[in-house]
Image (tube, rainbow, N blue to C red):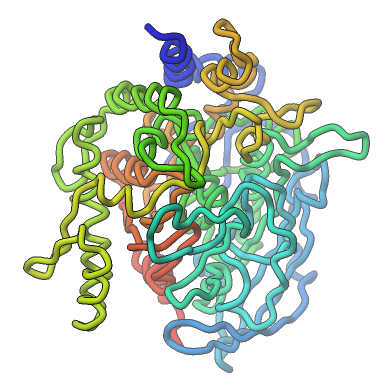
Length: 558
């Protein structure tokens, strides 16, 4: 077996031997009584069974500490004048490493378009303002996969864009669409304006919680890195536990906690949904004094989730390996040998495609994407155009057929249309430049390789292996591990979106998430937006309608 294939195979198979990883992590937390897995409805009773004897009363919500605010939120149904009570800088754990990050903001709607509103039993939307796995503060601006703009007239600015995410919603297809480096994981609508799911949820009468969290860039005063994996998901779980701890004190229904985020925030939203009440986080949550409560959520909404990190390079090269990067071909030896691993991973997953498609393999996955995701997205887009607009679009894109009001094309033509926006390897990059390389640093090292393949490629050492702590951390950062184990504490409701021209990661990532959750019997609403780039949110109103449908709550509409 060639050197790179050998390295890739070892790097690839080690993370997916997850039962051994789960066993080792469980052993590491054996000294702490463990949470029992439970469904989100049962877990929201507020007991995590940790056996802790600590006094958590300091985490009790103070309903008198809020300040009255107002804003105008633009929705598809019209503007909504929102009066709300805002509670700022609430530290959500007893022993924070840095309370600048480990705190949250709560917004409770009280008046909608001049009418009093009771949010006592409203869903609680947890809006993740996280891009590039960088740190977030509770007052950081965007709420849940969207920058302020369309959605709020007075929301604060987005601040300095974090590294690692691409520009929002680069539309129109063509080589590299969706891959211009900048942006902050913004979620943009069909009109190109930012969409803030948190603000839209507030205008619909939901309670909105915006948690901060340590990220890969966080450092203490002595220069120690304090936000490397898995700190970010541990912090977010502590925030969810704070919500459950305050059942009956905090307005809103803790049985209906819904997370939403974009890019890295979308991945973390999926991870919160998949890993609810997993015992693998117990000791780390205890270290920061997280509440003795559940961290399960009812539903997860993820836009362009950058997830399944240890397998992303394999998936990316299988998808985009033939496409040029910055006008030049990538190293085909490296690309081809990475892509070879996709067949092994597909076989390991053994997923059934949605719509009775059958078992997904490397041989049929391209057809599956076209049949179940891409062609329907193109059909919806073309059907919405006028006859002249559709004719013009098809003339510019002759690789797309239009028969019986349905779009058709081959997977290879689609890939040539969108191109690629990342080097090879795309995620475990040779120069340690990716956000994920930074995510898997440690207290003294800013960035590290997290696959044997990436490490051996960078060093030229065929026997090099990644640091021993990394496989466990990969498990803790990957929702696929928990979904493959059918974690009983997972969310049962999923809202998943991505643009077809988003080449920050492969559409396989979203398709896999949708397929595995569907196979578990969960409710899945998955959709791809045609010709939309990274961070697209083309149907924000559908997100609000989905909340109403899944929770039974009568949301407000202008």
